[in-house]
Length: 161
Image (cartoon, rainbow, N blue to C red):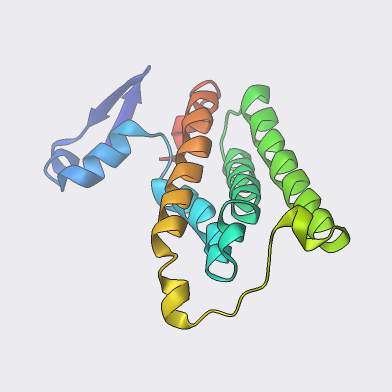
């Protein structure tokens, strides 16, 4: 249904007749968006537990998950460059380091330093955090997806789609 010639995408007539959104998602990125969107969204959901976690542990977790996902996808490609593997490893290292730093700071420092105060919240109050969780996860997705798109373009990553 789809072939590539160099950097150009060639769509078959059957694929071209499908919905516009699926054609655009195939044409714009060499990998599927859903796994990377989930890698950004799921860690950010910690913000429902404590508000500050969406932008702290959520960011670290999103970078860690995006790096792990990219590395696992690279293992299934025929051609992968050292650049793309190093890029995925850096995301993994950065996300893990950030989460461990935040955990250490939270456990060993007074609340006035880490400012992750415990507050009782009802389900309704927690659901009001949804815009922050969604907005943060979209930001984390784009922070990971754009550089991964560049490094994957250098590595023959397009064989995944």
